[in-house]
Image (tube, rainbow over all chains, first blue to last red; front, side, top):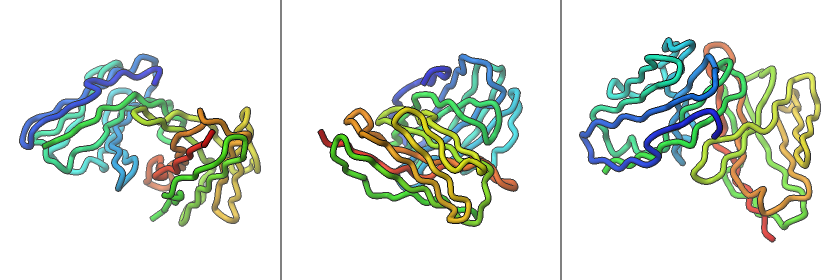
Length: 113
Length: 112
């Protein structure tokens, strides 16, 4: 988990509420990735940034999902409105390239009731 | 599209034995392949990378092979210990317009 801080670690919310997940990469890597992990679908890439610029958001499931990276040390993933099917563990990861070794944060476990 | 397959059934193994996991892929010709370890409640942690021109790679008690003809990688944990109990994921680099793709992982349980 070294190199990436995620908050909150756990989030329980009700359907329809807005959820904001946060990621703070500590070390200097040019790429930042947001993943979602479920038992059924495994680890899915949602979006990734290169030098704070969103490069590929084709994995974002719907318009309800949005992500920003205002600077090199902070990124957010927002779900508005949230739905029960969004329940999953969301990981932020950093790396030096799209196919290179990635360093994951501890994840945020989201439960939408 | 490319597909990555790992055994969905947990591998239960006696301490001291060798655990062997399989990662198969289709419609794909990766230049390299990665293996990660994931513990409950934690993010995946990088273990090993093996390139297509390397038949075998070792790191301590871990050994990875890469057979580009069979489109398969094998992951071995020798002299397994209870601390090796975790889920192990293989990952393949982007090909074409695709991104780094992870298998669903294979759980290993080492029984003392």
